[in-house]
Image 1 (cartoon, rainbow, N blue to C red):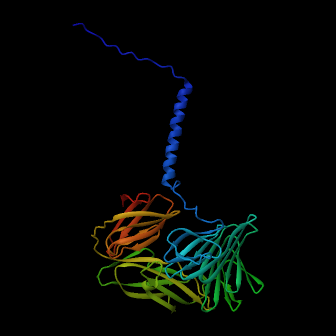
Image 2: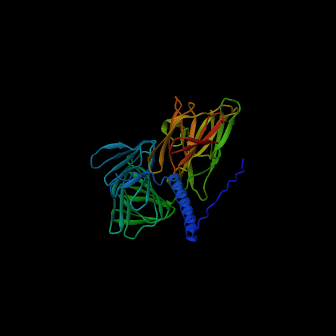
Image 3: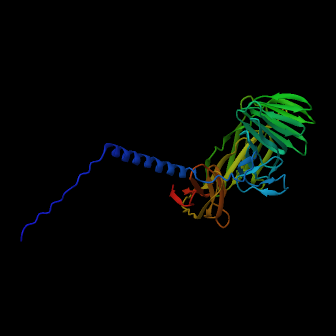
Length: 412
């Protein structure tokens, strides 16, 4: 048999240098496009922003929680706010005891409507490059924050018989009580110009003014709330006996404070709902308070103070602490995950876990109901969120959830 040799011939192609450069450029551009697309999807660039139905010159409710309602001026229809929406001139915003809303006006100023408040949007328009914002506070509390504004812009808050123009770079708080017909203005940054009966008064940074009977009754230095000292924020206290613990609440005055008395609230709810408050004590003279019988769970406490002049400060930011049992062996599981986007960067996350479990994410928290179900509203520009679960025994479990698919990505 003859030996046959197989020969493999390779045909070499002549490739121009420009073709090689073109292939390299194609690979680089493709990598950039694919990477950029992944980043855009991860940050919700291609998610609809629900702006089609927002009328021109409308203010936007960019954040809310609890019971918030809008009464439309055009139809007199009252709607319950369940997603990011808008308010037009003439519309009324009402918050209940557990409700609050943050509204962004046309000049980018931010209005925070506090619980038990009624606010009417009088104007929110742009004309010849200037912005006209006018809001009426009928009852409750309204916080206003402005940035730099054009010279021909106006940002006015009506309260009782007064009109207050909020200047640029200002943080102001307005309080009014429809029952007593009294009002208060607090300026922590910037300044405002208040007009009552044709007379104009400038209220500057760190000043307080009380309004009564159509005039400024009191004007003095702004009173700061007390500073909490213990229990520390986010502290965890062990109930070794199983019969509950006694907590000692202590605080101190801010520098140069002229406090005459203190008002303390301790609650099981971060929004201090009336049915969750355990301590509601005003006119305290001492800077301490003891509370016995605190069973395992999560608690919140806050303070405000009253000066000898009668001025009352705002509440300070609530501090939180937990009472836990010594043993920690319970396994935590979560099922029926669901993520629903309600507008912008706001999502409703829901699922089912053990009854009474504390669910926390992005500074918000809630408790699982008797059947273990929970719903938590969170706000984040990211495509995923870390959600932590805990019980009154100190057990903890965390999940990283995809907000696009509602799928658990990992645990921690």
